[in-house]
Length: 96
Image 1 (cartoon, rainbow, N blue to C red):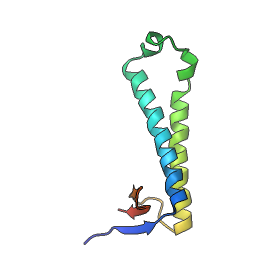
Image 2: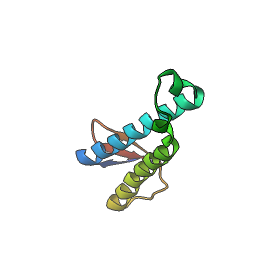
Image 3: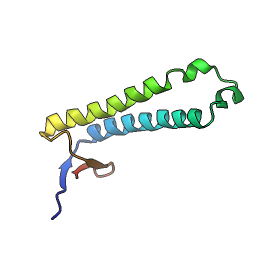
Image 4: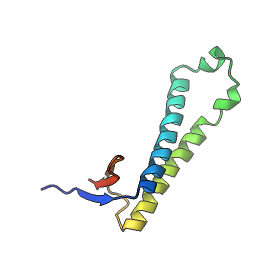
């Protein structure tokens, strides 16, 4: 039996999620590059202070994504521990 449930989101809600996810993914990419090649900062003659707070920024971006989910759960009366996916084009949130 399929347990999925669809909820239509507003375009603004989807836009807010996209912004948060893109920020998280960007910071995560920088974090992975630095972890895999810590000399990259010197190779590109960049100031190390730029990268000093990457982990903090990553945690902040993650919390921001979770905040979006908490707001959606509150608005649509959903359980916070459910899995979900979002179809950005159709603005549909599917609970898994």
